[in-house]
Length: 285
Length: 328
Image 1 (spheres, helix red, strand yellow):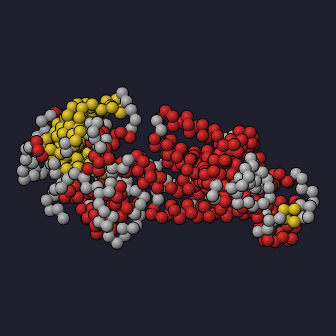
Image 2 (cartoon, chains in turn purple, cyan):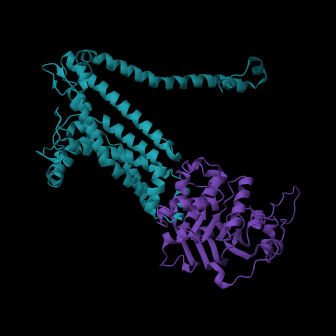
């Protein structure tokens, strides 16, 4: 399916100081301003008194995969969930600064949160399909947001399932409960469900952390495919994964600081910052 | 399982003493617990035996005709339980109609919309309501609720819905509707607190999934959270129904205790539980007593049948489309 994807990095039993990483043919092109999907300016975030993000500024280019890595509790998930305002569910949170997604200020007063979340899909750490049929899971977003006519819905569902590389496995049992799928299939179903909303941006919060290696590989291949059409921001604990799937990588350090953001190749072979190097070589984290 | 807990004789010597000792204790403990568990079915069987034996004269005399007959004449020794059965089912059903939407509304408000600081206090108040004895509800119903219903609510209902046969006729205070309202008030705390627990048990990931797909809070509740919890909510409703069916004191005090079936809900009625409570002490002859025991038997069977049907419903709902909801 995707011959371009590099083989997974083999785990070596001895301590290797650096993540082995095969350089791509070329570094991604320098980013032109018109190509930006997300711009974050001086963004800070608090859970009550605890500051989780400090003055984060970054840009995310369109139709590329941007990975966010960093030790546990560094704020990378908080940051991801700030982009579609999922943190609103938690009481006592506060933000400062600005996140602009496709020209709309996410924390601005004019944002239509429902429309925003429809444009910015999210895939969660654990697969969370609804206890409905496979079909109804994918149709949930489009039906809710009236994105297409009832007549076109089956086509849209099929298209999304195909894009999520799940169609061939479920085409004969679209009415079967989604909870009966395997973990990897459920996660791909969740991706298909997010695609059903026809988003421009996909946020993925450690989408493979609950999956086995084979399911992980399938999801990674899928991410690689999807970046042709979608802007993808992925949070991952797994540095090999970041190296495999992303074009750009941002490193968050404890305290919610974005230390460094650059081309994935550069971050993993020639990090500018000492802390980044320490993290990717496994000296802490 | 059972065999592995009892080591073979030649093994026992090799095992530490404390372990083989605890295995004997386990057996004793197991036997005690088994006896406790067995007590339940034994109790039910004994209850049935007592009811059937007590009702025997009435069963012989009236047979199954008892449940469709409407006469209740202790002097002539003629008994039929039809109005009682209708009264019991009708008051319970009306109580559910009133209580379910309100209870679910409160439960949804408390789990999804209420500010954090009011959730616990309101939930605790609700649980307190469930602990009030039913005779207190009855007194309150007679002295507070019934006057309000008679002077304000019933006339309004009659003027608005008077074209329906259920809301016509003379307005008495004690009535089927008054009993249903007090029943509704009494079962609301149960439905509320159980469905609140069930809604709290819906994983946050389900809320997040719906909201991340562009659902509003209300749409998330309607399309994701309540469907996820539906079998548990059904369980909560059935708990309320079970209580409504058997509720005695408050109903007896408000229903008016008249042994007949009238279409109007403003008219008095009677329930199975109420007739037993009212007439048990006065039952003089054997047949009156037997008829009442027969009523108790019917009430017992109605409750069992409704509960079984409800379990079946929950089972089918939770099986359909793989509900994530827990069974109660």
